[in-house]
Image 1 (cartoon, rainbow, N blue to C red):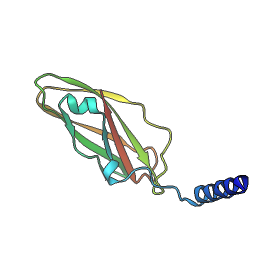
Image 2: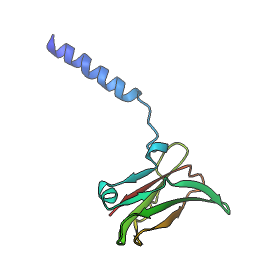
Image 3: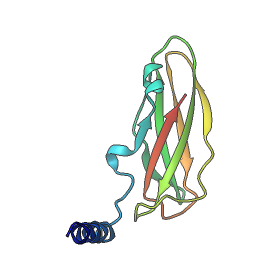
Image 4: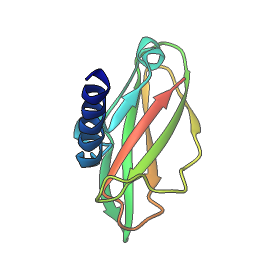
Length: 124
């Protein structure tokens, strides 16, 4: 009896797993990801926006340094298509020095013309 119940439970679990639909991995609330160390360093940022610039899909974000010393930030833009799939090849991480008490704009041009969403990841 136990084996039969276990088999029924396993079958139900497999059916539930097979029937779930893939979710879009990025939404408007996840377009900016900052590691805790970035926040602790006094850095803030605007959510990246997406625009069309001479036919290219471009994303920009403004980074702010509230500290009285420069801070080196590593950042990477991740692009997604209309289905929510990550677009490859991925951009390489880039670094920028934010001068003390100032802001810097960072940007990215999508390598795929049908890019619809973007995520900006910031770390130290």
